[in-house]
Length: 244
Image 1 (tube, rainbow, N blue to C red):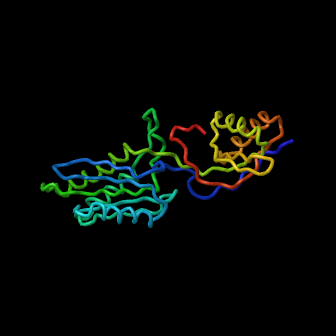
Image 2: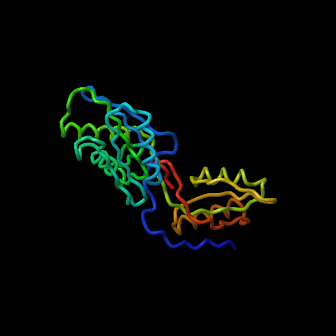
Image 3: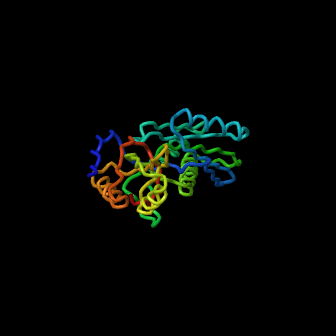
């Protein structure tokens, strides 16, 4: 009889958060009193990657007056930085950082999720001065609006720390099993191969009931021949509306 793997001790810190979907930088531009505000968002894993975005945009928009930035990094959002880049102190970087920190994820139905938890995101707002002074209050509103508007439009995903498993099945049966599991809503993480078997990879929440249900489904699909094998933990992206 197959046995359900024992749950590992949970890793300290949050097990999920929201971030940008993988892909190219997201860009959006707004105009306020003839000043152009170009917001660029990039998914980043550390401060080096965040600062690289600022440096790249300084070269690309070399004739712009300001390249203000803010970034939040880590599942626990432990790294938070902002820079006004010549704008009056507190009028650019901090409003941008607050836009990142206060961003509340919304489902497809438009309902707010439980908490603001956006992370691993760097925002840079490039400003071309339009000749009309905005004043301190106007700058705060402009930079906040620039970052918030871009976040409203950018593609976001849920990043979950999940338990990883493999299932060893004969090559001829792997495709059917993988399709059945994917149709049931499981996150598939790719396959590996040896001489006789395909190692089908999948991930799921670190929850005893979820894992037990997966083992029962697997036993039913394979007539008891296959079982889950532990493969560690990892961060896995999933759609914001994913139910598993």
